[in-house]
Image 1 (spheres, rainbow, N blue to C red):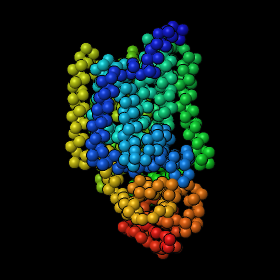
Image 2 (cartoon, rainbow, N blue to C red; image 1 turned 180 degrees about the horizontal axis):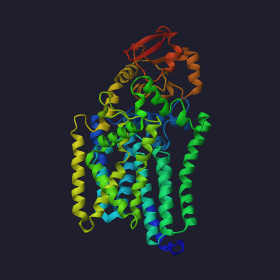
Image 3 (tube, helix red, strand yellow; image 1 turned 135 degrees about the horizontal axis):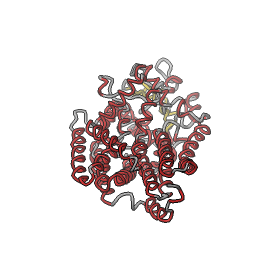
Image 4 (cartoon, rainbow, N blue to C red; image 1 turned 135 degrees about the vertical axis):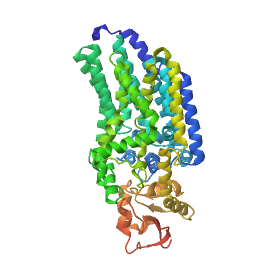
Length: 538
């Protein structure tokens, strides 16, 4: 089959429907996603655990600083996290009550979840009709760890949403090639979704690369024209490549280094070295075998053994059917976390601590949620393999996955992603105590705190009861430099107490503390972990 045999007129009609969304998923699918989100949000907000993660606090604070700080502007997005999730939060956190309440992340999470279930249903439908489509959706929604993240201002939901859309559109394009149709609208959708994923999490960079490879190989196989395959691949790649280029340019213009996100003082690699220096982790976490073991364990603890077994079976069935049904290549696109995360872990750009590692606690275990969409689609592949028995197969698979998800709820430590957040919140209690004390103090004035100390700086900003424009940190370079040199204009100085064991050096304490004192200020609060100095006199 050649490109000349494609049917552009019919394709334009189908592509138009794909872009407008009426062909992605029926209304009941979106309703199911909304009901799942509503139930999860109700539980999370009743328990008060929506912003337990330090990263959750940081994401909302970064977004808020863009419109409310001593130096408002896009530079407040920083360089640690990719910008799109924070940009999407800005319209919500700009509203003071919404920001203070913590509901902004959940509201954006509803949007992400709607995109995710639409993409999952579409992929499953391409596999084997409505039964497979519903299987993909329900397999995703029955996991409490996954649902929790969609109620919090984290970056994983953004990536999963755009990954599902990209994979669905890519599968639809290749399915069109096999049927003699050029689905240009779906190609555009795939490219835009890949660009959004690129700007959401770094797994998105791998996703865009895998989608490009799948499109190139699929074009070669079903169009049988190398020139057409190259043109399609280049056309798809332009938008995600431009997105990555914009991020590099932003880092160059703001931080004087296009790779500041990779090697800057606040990068994940520097944080990993800090954990090693503090003795929290050993150098053996970078060993390839340990990396694979830790990452595999995180997937097991987050998603459960049943989805993994069903997923492996589904991958086998999908690989068997790809030659005749190219839509099954969606699994390759969704496998990007399985490729990216071990690389990042092995290079020291991330670290995972699982419960199986013993008394070291849990850290970044939520990375195990990355393959959740792929395993959901793999479950749909199992149902599609059943053919005329797809409906009873869907019931059986969904029931098994639902029981597996329910089992995660009765875990003594709760769903492990939720448990990690709760542990982080408990560890941050001294910061919350200090923030509540500051909130109750009379008088205004500037507050100096090192914004690199997480979650202390974020907790003080959120719970300290003071306008963000009163906080001084390195995010406002002019004020920051002046405050460290001449702190007499600062009413409150927040430092890590001398007895505390900080993983990140406190630049304020190092610059100003001398023999436990700060000139012109007296120690007004100290709980052993956080100390607050108040300016002497009026």
